[in-house]
Amino acid sequence: MMLVGAIKSIENAISMLTKNPALVLVPILIAFILAPIDTLNNANFQFPQESAEVAKEQLRNFVHDFVKDAVIFGILTSIMQAISGYSVSRGVLDIIRQKDYQIAQIIVEALKNLPQVAFLNVFGWVVTILVIAPPFAYLYSEIMKAESFTIPGSVMDNFFFLAIVSLLILLYVAPASLLLIPAYVKTKSIRSALKVYRLALNRLSSTIGFGILVFIAIAIINLPTMLTRFINNQLLAGIVTAPFNGLSNAFSMTAATLFYLFLIEEIEEE
Image (cartoon, rainbow, N blue to C red; front, side):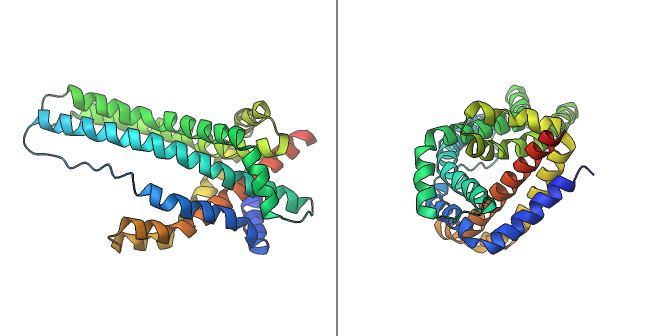
């Protein structure tokens, strides 16, 4: 069955994290470090009623600020989470090999490999953004060309069509990108790590199933963070959500490492 590997990876990830809670420590620490930084991204847009030109100008400024903040924070987050991702993936491999999980030693190793892992993390982030961006870029372009507040129905039809296409591609790209760090930790080669996109494509149904299951699991983990909508202080809300973000990152990287090992084992058996 196409979901056998995906389901086993999720089940084994839950079991491994339960038996080895130390795997969560570094991701949670990184999440707490990033919590105050996340509050700096405050781009907010309120639709004005004065005129279409005013709306366009404010939308243009909003998009500019949002993209600038997203790029800066996205790159910084990717670099910091590279340490987290490497430590978890390395820890999973050590546990499988029945080695002692030594956090200090693994963090030192993660820092030594930081340039390569950060590059892979940023690369995966950029690829994901490029998949998501087209429908929104199209809608933004059409709004900028419009002469009034009204958006033609044909434009919205095209937007939803592009959004569906982007979502379908994302179902492959997002889980495939999760495999980049485990592949590097396993092979110590950027070139080999980038081959995960072809590996995931060759097992497309399993990859999509894995991605959906990871998304569902992360959504469940983060359910308590919905309560932060009642917290007016952004910094406090970020601190409250940090442990859940860290647990989500630890879970997704543990599952990704196990799923990557499943895929390469399946390929080797053919």
